[in-house]
Image 1 (cartoon, rainbow, N blue to C red):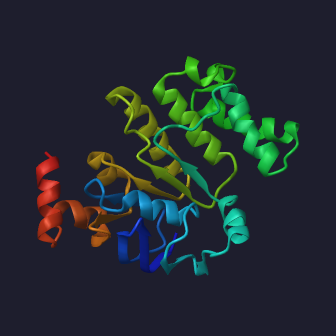
Image 2 (cartoon, rainbow, N blue to C red; image 1 turned 90 degrees about the horizontal axis):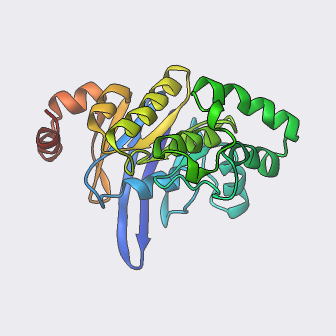
Length: 242
């Protein structure tokens, strides 16, 4: 992944949400962003995904800086996948058509080529039997897995996932987390915002603790969860981890 963030600043309505945030990772597959609510995790993720433009600062993946013009950002967004808390599936379309739409309309594949691309992942993740159901007919876990597949079938350089299990009960959340773990094992690179600390500890190559608009601590999952040197971060983990 080789992510480098330098002095990233973001403000909304005069409130500073990110305050000269800097972060540099190794060549990793999975970066997990954790920390208290309102600390800036989602804002950072949206900038990394090219959805928002910061007030100041720079972001680079593998040495290539993110564009700062809308045309450049539109082109960049076609190379990544983003998954939100609320699925964002089109309610009037079947699960299959939700997968096909971006491939045909945005990436200009033929319907035949798009159908062939989605066939195998639908089967691999146990969703083929539900492909012709509309979102209202799917469970929460199924809807979120379809949303992840929709981001995945465009063959993104990186997936950005914002609290993908926050609206799910524990059983459905486990389905989604198992899927994300399998994707990592298959080589998918992702940045994940989550409050699922046990999963973060298991799946992350590196963890960044975001609070007060900056990176309060950053390191390997083992370093962060076992004995983080930052007292505030260590106390946070001690409160919520067994």
